[in-house]
Length: 520
Image (cartoon, rainbow, N blue to C red):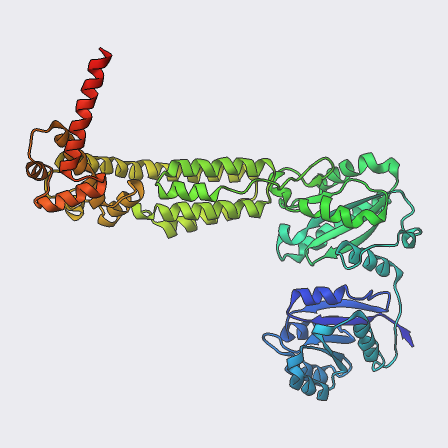
């Protein structure tokens, strides 16, 4: 009998489900190895040809090519491959079809347990002639650490690693290859080769991991006497060997117990992977002494909305700029920072749309520029240019409009005694009627009619205090052709009729004169 790993291919369109299965059991310890993953049947068929798995674990419901049709093709084309079906409660009719097509068994996803998965896998192995499960100690230990790092285990037995790691110092070293190079697998291979050449040439002991399909991670074990030079050595090595601009390794401070690896990964490694934005010229970031503090007060969106409603756009821009400075000072995550700026810019641009600004065109232009930025220096320059451009537009269009508004208010002040309608004023000044109406409601806290009535009644009060004209005469002088309407408006605003107001003012005047005489 040949002694080989049992090779397993996982076919499941849900990333979380794939990750759960990968870390549900200690695969290598049990004699299995996951050789690949696919998100649908069509993709899996291509992988089977290359990877030649012994067992395929496949979801029943998948896009492009579902589990039923996929299993039928497998049984016809690769009869030696054993199939295990993943199913939910409501797919049993599908499951029956796959079992009839030769699947080993099915597993209910909602109730999947490590023991159930292992039992089903071994059941499939029993159907593979000549295969005997074998364990690999190195991969076994790697699996234990990876499960602990990702939180699938609550603790780790340091004693198990006594013979694996003989030295006293540990560090985590790694790179987010997906973030740096996208889907280019060639860069991942290059980084693996370069890193391992360096580690081997310096006689460091290490275990390699691929975390969540995006982080190339190494746990390094070395002597305390080598600690001072490890970072500078790797940095010099990278400067000689690396040509890719986006290369950005992170290395943690040293620690002396493997039980600390979970804490180091989550607090002193992972949060720093996106910090390349702030370190343009660095190929490796030693996180010792670098504190990331995302505790920043929330942006004052209420004040921002208030400024936009008041059309105080310059103050709104200054509020954004002030917050950006604070966010940069605490090294806010690049994507959080960019998204915040884009959201605030969007609100500002939409508010400027009434001034004939091409909002959508400008939004796309600004967002593309921000998305393309790789480093802080470029970001600050580009954002400043955007604000300069918007300020120029505001000075040219918004401030000019405010001047025209003031001209309109002055016109009303001078012609309050004439018949005035908002539409007539808008036409006379070639102004947007709806914006003018909005202006009165929001800036003067009253509509145009209320504003005009208040101006007229203030003038009427001055004339009534003089006590030289009849009330009906004053009514006509301030622009009311209907005397009774004037009286109603006057009482609504002052709380008095014109006659009672005049009497009250007369009495008050007499009292004031008597008081002045007594003082003299």
